[in-house]
Amino acid sequence: MVNTHLFAPQRKHPLFALSMGDPAGIGPEIACKVLNKKPSFSDRVVVVGDYDVMERTAGRFGIPVHFNRITGMEDYRPGVANVLDCRAIDTSSFVIGKAQSSCGKASYTYITRSIDYALKGAVDGVITNPISKESLHAAGINYPGHTEIFAEQTGTERFSMLFLLRNVVVAHVTTHCSLRQALDLITVERIVSHIYLLHDALQRLGIASPRIAVSGLNPHAGENGLFGNEESECIVPAIKKVCLKGVDATGPYPPDTVFMRAFKGEFDGVVAMLHDHGFVALKSMDFEHGVNITIGLPIIRTSVGHGTAFDIAGQGKASPESLLAAFDAACRLYHNSRS
Image (cartoon, rainbow, N blue to C red; front, top):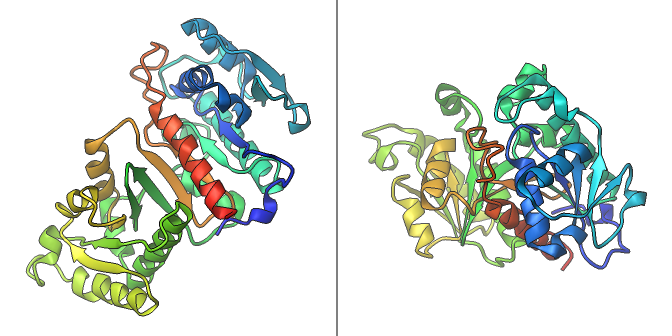
């Protein structure tokens, strides 16, 4: 569960840090669009980024947003779009739509500042806009992505990345690594851990008795050993372990059909063995409304379900729907953690 003692008790509504994301990507644009589209959003988030980038973005696309530049949470004002100005990058020092080290360094600053405010209780969690892993690495910041940054900054060892879409939540036993590395990570202990993390997250999202499907690793879930033995050696023992503790988990199910069954309402969540098993299925169903959630952290963290979209950055075409969904998920986690 989230450490609710970290949250400031005086606020009537939750307040989240929204990290701006890579300055050269679509993060600033979708943040401006949401701030304009949903006025109540302004009273629920503080953009942690660069004021000049946000102002330039709003001006470029003619988005009427009233910004308030702040340097600390003591300067926060309701009714306007507060931007905690990190002054991490100059608007003339980068090109929109491409990976570059200056943007990687800046986006990392926004993330760490947001985490720091959440850990101190100045905000109730963090919502993240997309970053570029290439930009991070160009800046010498060698993390696979947001999830690992949050884990290290919060001192968390047991965590997982979830993807929420409509009525289905998916946990991934392996994520940002090569397929060869992923196969070595499929162990009983790791699968058990991710089933428990998913079960806890579903309850925090308001599902009292979650129904969890566990996906297989191999085609047809191994076909009784014809296509691999990971199911019998790792996945089945893991399912038996959690069932003994009262968790409603079943499987392993073939990865090419289990997501369809979940979307039809048979399951509340799915544990996928591989990154692409889950994400291909979900993003093919609906690319705009998916949400990433990192579970196991002492703070709330949700994120848009897409990347920086450098190919359309700066063109005014980016959809803010995933950011709105990430905000709604953060609110659900907040309210259920306090009920």
